[in-house]
Length: 372
Image (cartoon, rainbow, N blue to C red; front, side, top):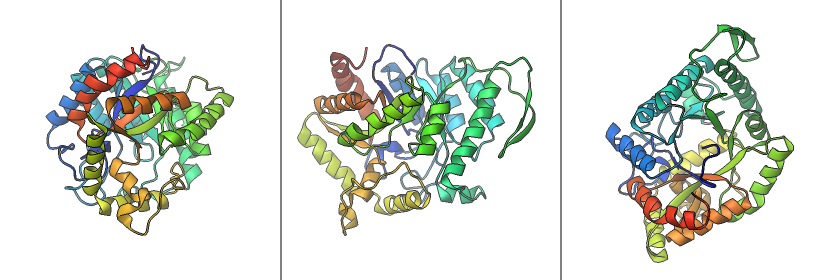
């Protein structure tokens, strides 16, 4: 996903948990996570269609039980290993909550999957904020910037384990990790290592990305919001000497043949919204000191069913792109015009959504010069 012929990258997001990044809703034809073939089939279809990446979310527990959205989760490193062996071209990612996985273990797993895939592995490194999961692991949530100090140390170790040095092992004496004789062989296929993305958009999160990442997710709530947020983020990255840093957005695509059908399907998704899970997730984010979220531009309401800060989670908090193929591509073009270089997309019905992407959206993106 670095370089390559496609000017604007497209990855599939969240196909490792029930309903995926289709959102916290109980709509039909969402990911069920009933068997491995369901996910392998989606990855292989995305691979055939020329999708650039396949990126999971890191969840260790559900919000409202195993039969609700995000209630079942495939672990992302083993998920990546399975899909790496079943695909040919697509970049396969693992998403890692760095407080829960030791850096030596992570570096070794990443290198292994990079060899399985022939050099197609990627890492989505996240500092974490989800208090219930911290407590499940018996760990207290550190203060926001401390989480990024830990992540910086963690990533520094991983990068050094991937590097080829004069000595085959090293010691490390940090504030969070003290290692003796650290080593990881063989090295990854990719040099200097698998590509890295990060979603931290706070000042501390940005500094982590400027130092360690190839891609940074911009925290935007809409196409219009990107026009004010993304140029500032681009300016910060360039000032840090990271003109090469890709800026991505998370989008939620609902594409139908007519705008009327798309709007009706959006209404259906909202009617099927899991309000209990959405309320709980908003509470977790607000109380987990997750500073990448801005609530100011969401329409508030005393009626929770009309409160946009809750309804946004029916689409997993992603930028909504709703309409005909032409309208979807127009939205993607506007995102690119604002400085976005790629998107991770969540879909309600991943199977149908991938078909529409291949048959309707990608041809228009090629016509617009966004894809080769």
